[in-house]
Image 1 (cartoon, helix red, strand yellow):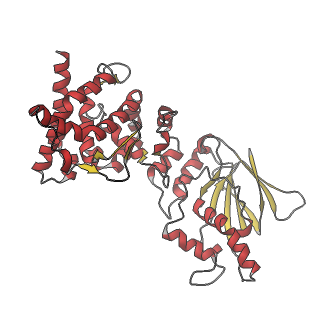
Image 2 (tube, helix red, strand yellow):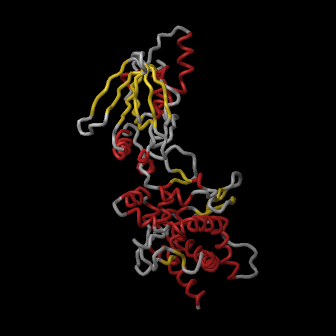
Image 3 (tube, helix red, strand yellow):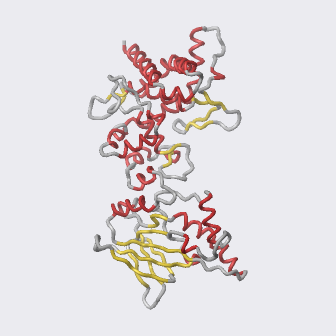
Length: 408
């Protein structure tokens, strides 16, 4: 349990008639007295105060904006938090002790700020400047409302985090993370060297977000796209938001979670294709002409090149000066849905991941040649590669052919 002392200007309580044990404490707090140890863990997103709207909040706090001075209390919606308990200090009229639970998530005991984390961070960051202004005898008297909810069911508190965060809309995946909808992903990724390369909340500096991982998993979703049917997951490239909605629907999560046993392999394959694709294209022409020392992959529209800062391939722990564009990666990666064996109680590869690697080595040159053909057919518009159902089907057929040939 974590305890925080709070000094207030004014306090009152409101009971919720639908939840007999629930109480909302409403405190008016001087900006100078807002405790720096109020926990932020229950807020569904990380704080990024660099946006223009938050710079305006700072200017209002410091009386550096147009309009009436000392109006921060009336202009700001306040800070909302949940706590285990709120107790008034005996013998004091303005001091309280807030006790916060320290669970893993709101659903299992985590308390703290549910909404208003940006407001709190802006106040904390500028408390030294507030003191300096007062020392210069500026007329600065700013307050903020702190709403602390006690006694609500945990599921309701988790929902509150989403409904309260509406002024600057919280992304749906941040709320889903807040509600433990990605717990299985955390378990699969735990201990992996690239675990911190995947962000589950907004404003986290990482090359991939959880929505990217779901889109990659969609490419292997044999429940929605069986190998025996002619449909292909082109939407994984085009509609990350729709993939997330599908995941969050009742029963949707199971289609993705069933792929957990092969997820680390899928991520490795993603980076292998991204890194080796251009060389596979060159290999196609060297196989056609053994005397050729170079291929034709230097100026492909669907290959990205860098002269200085290298591309990172976190899932295989490597870097390089070129990589395939996402529009070329996704159809190639989706083709390996053919290699998924979902006939038993658990998902596994046909053979092993080494078998998958072998098929990529054998089929890769042909797949990259087909990618260039599709690019040319569409006027070298890279986006068209990632959207073409015909292209997905051609690569899927190439993987099937080479896998079956390897078994012969």
